[in-house]
Image: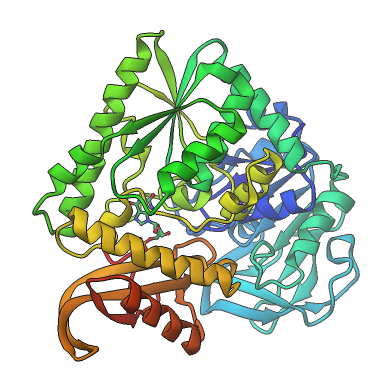
Length: 512
Ligand code: XMP
């Protein structure tokens, strides 16, 4: 049962609102702002939240939701743009702010209210607005203000209508989660009965209902997301799910064996397609990063398509399941336009345009840490749930320039040493991702009494929360020194190791 509905007006943070409510145990769904009122009301939510958004309410083509929603006597909480929409709808005034307000502000509480129960005076809230409420509509009162915003939190005197100028959903609003929880539990009377177990049951039921007797194809990479999706689909419709793992020859040491073992342990049948020779043949002599990515992308499609056809001998496969997460879609869905292409990311997302599949994306609304919690609920081993992300094009984008069997071997050996050392030093879980990059650079060294002229390897480790931005990891110098020594001593062909201290932006996490 849906407890709350968030209407999305295009904020980058919309999904975070739902996430905070999930953390409070309140089951929430998100719909575009233009969803007809009858469809929203038919779901019988106990309250509505209007998200922030990039538009201005006074613009001619401003985004507006159905006005009937305000007449249904449902509690409504408007956040940022959502609050300005409430103000505008009920007869107040919204104007461009003289001084835009971005970043931290301190909440000055003016009167006690259930919405702000448990919130301390002067607590930090996060502002991000260029427009400002100039005057409140009749019958609205101010619950809190800040130095730059005289109307920081507002409420109607008699109707259940509320507004917040700041973003309670971002972690920088230190007590924002409490405010959302107050709205859900104290004002809307929601039941806090949602948890990961409930999510599993709900997603399995959804997949069963949607898929019926049809078949699902699920490509797995051995990473957390696709493994969780495969496991969910298999739990939902069992052998109607065909799970395929393509070995493109660009994997790390022992990776294929680990994936095979994990699926065997999970008792999920796995089709392994060994296409490594084909990929390496196609990549021979190719050194431009985008060209490498594209070759890997379309070769993957070709191999996958061939396997799909083979599997279709047993009956048509209607669905393609994939592990798209919320950060993957944040810039391309919602009410905004698509973002710029920085790199052609290779994943099975490229498939549907060319293949006749209906997409199943059960993780679309989740963040990485939620997927890990979901994986734990499904019984996936902890070791795999904590694995660092690994890109679809694999080691090919960690070898600058042309890729060959020898360079792959070098980077595999070095990577094994680096990752093992991180585990031993208990540093592995403290970084988002760590790996080696074989640079297309040779330099002179001296080992024993002999001159060497060998390869340079870069170690890369970053801290991030979703991979969209990252900071290089401040690994201890002694640790780096010891890893560098071990690599130079044990991996013949590498005589110099450097550490990458670039953050993202301006760098990207991978080098290509
Ligand atoms: P960048 O290099 O864009 O990487 O800063 C951000 C995150 O995405 C991963 N990555 C990929 N993942 N297919 C994937 O599935 C790709 O083509 C790809 N390229 C980069 C990267 O490892 C990091 O976690």
